[in-house]
Amino acid sequence: MIGIKSIASYVPVEGVDNYAQGAKFAKDQEFILGKIGSTFLPRKEAGQETSDLCVEAVKALFAANPSLAPESIDALIVVTQNGDEEGLPHTAAIVQDKLGLPTHVAAFDISLGCSGYVYGLYAMKGFMEAAGLKNGLLITADPYSKIVDPEDRNTTMLFGDAATVTWMGEGAPWQLGKAKFGTDGGGAAHLKVSDGVFFMNGRQVFNFALLKVPAHLHELLGESQLAPADIDLFCIHQGSAAIVDAVARRFEDDPDKFVKDMVETGNTVSSSIPLLLEKHVLGSQHQRVALSGFGVGLSWGSAIIERKG
Amino acid sequence: MIGIKSIASYVPVEGVDNYAQGAKFAKDQEFILGKIGSTFLPRKEAGQETSDLCVEAVKALFAANPSLAPESIDALIVVTQNGDEEGLPHTAAIVQDKLGLPTHVAAFDISLGCSGYVYGLYAMKGFMEAAGLKNGLLITADPYSKIVDPEDRNTTMLFGDAATVTWMGEGAPWQLGKAKFGTDGGGAAHLKVSDGVFFMNGRQVFNFALLKVPAHLHELLGESQLAPADIDLFCIHQGSAAIVDAVARRFEDDPDKFVKDMVETGNTVSSSIPLLLEKHVLGSQHQRVALSGFGVGLSWGSAIIERKG
Image 1 (tube, rainbow over the protein chains, first blue to last red):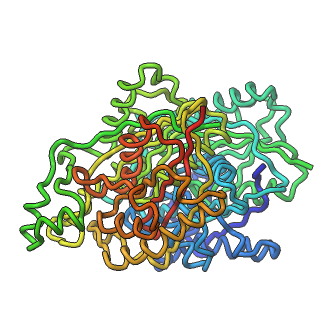
Image 2 (cartoon, rainbow over the protein chains, first blue to last red):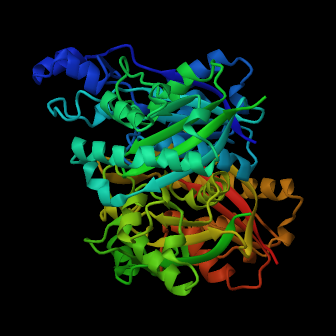
Image 3 (cartoon, chains in turn green, blue):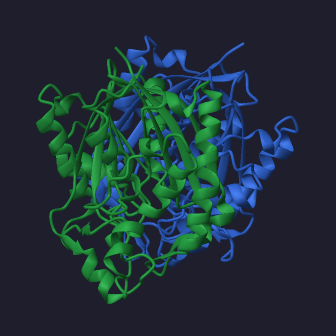
């Protein structure tokens, strides 16, 4: 069974002081920290491409896992909606080349936003098992600084650039349990790019998240014969502090099990959940963790991962 | 085991007379039919979006399979590099909405070109098995008329618009066998979009295909303990008549087993292989068929499918 072996990430050191941004839009520090949730938003350099962020994350993974030889990689997925090129080629091919990975790598991109990591876990596990592959790199990299208008108060205080990579393979300490997914293209207009600029209807997205995510997690737990008390930690997409807090409040007995950690990163789209796993789960004593990602599409996905052995 | 249950397609009725296009570029009918392979190139209407092509293909699938209820669909993948919107949202979400499919559908896009169907088969099968899903629609729709310059003699005589859908589920007559994949981002520049226009270095792509595809198919057969004689039909990407012929010649004893059928469709990118399967395989007596897709990335994938029961 293919599972999660290791996670690494790349978060740019440079970025934007979000208190300063808030002041520009007459938002006080309480709003920036309490509602938005981020005092600093990492930004890639202008010359850095999406593939460069991916490469940095994978280099960190190789550095942390000397046993993982680049030539043993045989699957590579990049979850992004802001890749290097205009539609084609796919960013995963560029990453294969920049890293000098072998040409026997199976590589493709998955187009999904904030729900992308949960989908990506099952797409990678399933693809590897169906095709008999051994070592997969599931990369997330969706630098919204490419599409966010710095004058748009609805979006410019929210998003941070980052990339993560999850090494998936046999003999992994974390295995994937049950998952549930959902899609409602009827809400596509609430989060979209037009003429190169990102638009978000924040109120609609907040309402969507609050309507869907707690119910979806409760359903997933019920179908897994689990109660919230059986979950050690909830790692949900860090859309904003307000969204994480509102979802957590729907779990009356366990709101403290919801990790909120985005002060220095912002909303990193599909990288938010793997950043939480890297920091709060992989090196922990936790046994069972619930994930939920939600956003553009509209699209959502929830899953349970469990420590084995 | 998830396999291939049915395939349907949508090919626009309107299109371009390729002999007339050839005359414009001083290419005779022998070149158009013998080297390019297509006398007619279907073109979507200007107002048709990529998702509309997908919807037409799925409607044809539902019409041909009355037992398949729309509400039973729980997975939807669109293979495209020319989706509806600018990166986000993904086209699969728009298709979910336009078809009125249930919101419990797991939907995402895969960004791949002419290799995309072979990857898509294993991504869909694997994702469904990993997530416990029952009825998946694997859609291909990559209308190159969006990006091809009608004045570019290297590309405008090649591509046709089309969409296909492959119903995947349990109890399927066709099962997926062994597969092999490959990626060489070092050749990305040979097939790419810049400033909204598609560029192709035809000679480099031809050389790549001739270098990679026959060897890849021979390796796949060898690893499957099969000889070319054990394969009933080879359905490879219909890049051009010249490419199909050149690959077939590398199988000295069996060149006639390579289907060449693109006279009325052109190179339909990721739709070329499922169009062949729909027409030449699903209703046939064939027992074992080899597939190979290759193109933008550079990327390639080969697989064997087998009739069961």
